Image (cartoon, rainbow, N blue to C red; front, side, top):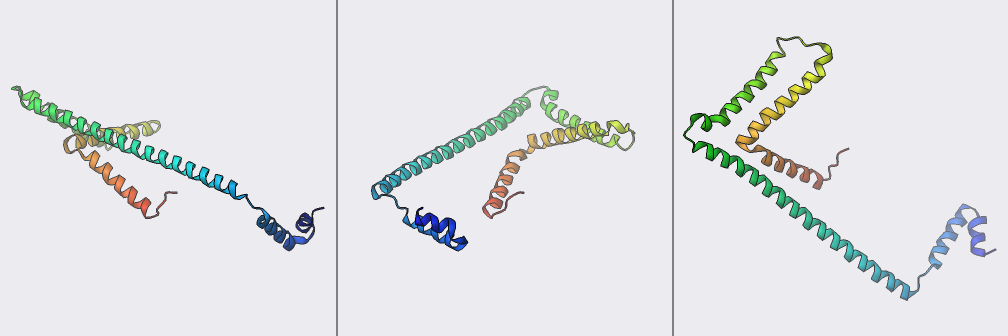
Length: 172
């Protein structure tokens, strides 16, 4: 049997580690193979960097498209309001405000009814879901339409998230 294998297999734990260490030290790559491996490694690293740059460019492009779509959406709402204000009909000029007032009243009345109407116990979950949808969709949409807070809020959230990640915070 090979003396190195005899040392690894038959000499106890200390001799096994020493034998493995000797085996690793005796394992050498021919210099021409090492140069080939290094060239191949550099090619693979260059390819990975190319994919990384392509990926970053795609993300920037998608972010730009998203921002363009947001601006176009805001511009459409503004153009609609400008067009409505140029009408002679007072109802057309004030329609957005009437709609807003109606949605806000609907939301508050629906929420206020919880104090006076007793609902069946089986329906509490569905009623709470409807209340959540009405409150979030109606009120949040109105605020977003008039004040455009969704973009700023999202940007602030993104900044806070990036800052947390940069400082080593990881969610569980």
